[in-house]
Every structure is written in C-alpha cells, then in structure tokens.
Length: 207
Ligand SMILES: C[S@@+](CC[C@H](N)C(=O)[O-])C[C@H]1O[C@@H](n2cnc3c(N)ncnc32)[C@H](O)[C@@H]1O
Image: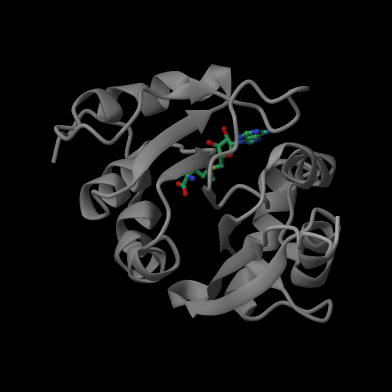
C-alpha cells in the first residue's frame, strides 16, 4: 500500500463485498463508467479483479487530484485515465457504455443532482445497460439502522443538501429512465447494492 495516496477506510472495507456482486452482474459487460470515483480504490480493485472490463473512473474536476495518483500507479491496461464528470454536466462529456457504477455518491450530492444523474441515464444510455449503485438507503421512509440515522444527522451537519436517499424515490427515477430493478443486495454496515437494467427496446412486429 502507498502511504501517501488519498485513502478511504470504508472503500477498503466494502470493496470485497461489492466485487462479489459486480463479478456476477458485470460478467457480460465490456465497459464500465464509474461516477464519483473518489480515491480510485474501487476503480483499481475492480479493474484488477474483472480484467474483461474496461473501467473508466470519473470525478468532479475539483476532485480529480484525489483520483489521479492511484490510477496512475495501476499496472494493468484496462483502467482508463480518469475524466472529469459532474452528473449535472449538460450534455455529459463521456458516453454511457454498457455499465455504470457509483458508490456512496447519491447521499452526498444534492437530490437535484441525483435527478440529473437519472435524467442523463434516460437521455444518453443506449439499450442493454446495467446500472449498479452502492450506498445507504431508507426504505418506507425509515432508516434501516440506528447507525444510518446517526450518519444522516452527521451528513446534514456537513451539508444541508446531503442525505440518505429513499430507495423508492431513486427506484422511481430509475424506472422513469427506463431501468428495471434486478437486485437489491444487503451489504455489510447497513448499505445496499442496487442493480438495475435497461433492456433493449422491443422491435414492433411488422415494422
Ligand atoms: C463519499 S465520496 C465517494 C467516493 C467513492 N465513490 C467512495 O465510495 O469512496 C462522494 C463523491 O461524490 C462526488 N460528487 C459529489 N457531487 C457530484 C456530482 N454532482 N457529480 C459527480 N460526482 C459528485 C464527490 O466529488 C465525492 O468524491
């Protein structure tokens, strides 16, 4: 491990569990766009352990310096150079390939940005795209644990626009963008890994 690199302990803790699911849901994918890659720990770990994928990490322009150093040390050839992406960019500066992943981002960005993310998915994603989102979610308007309730309080103190999102609200945005929920995986530390799929449009008969 490189002591001087930006580091997130939670990434280190959750990456083996996320990988276990991604190895299944991304098994037939070719190219993953990661939104809000942070320190790049997920990008490097997932690219190294799913060598059939080309992994494209992205971050807000202002946070690219956190992401670039670890990615620059990656030894394989399936990790692309990090790109700047704000989900509110109009249009998105990168194409949406056949898979998109993001971890711990929906509760950080304002809900209006979450809406923008799904609006962009609705507009720019082609057919047959797998979307995997990791993080904490509320269900039925309730926290799934006391620790998530405390975390939400802490988030509100950091930024009034940050908050644990309601699963139902996010699933409704995904549905409006053409994505159907495929999996809702319970993960350690009261997190979830939600997986949606946008199917190929049915071709009308006789047309
Ligand atoms: C808690 S960090 C998560 C980083 C990493 N994915 C992880 O799991 O450790 C949240 C990230 O969301 C990014 N972010 C916030 N608003 C964003 C936006 N509008 N578009 C893209 N990324 C955004 C921040 O730059 C930050 O790196």
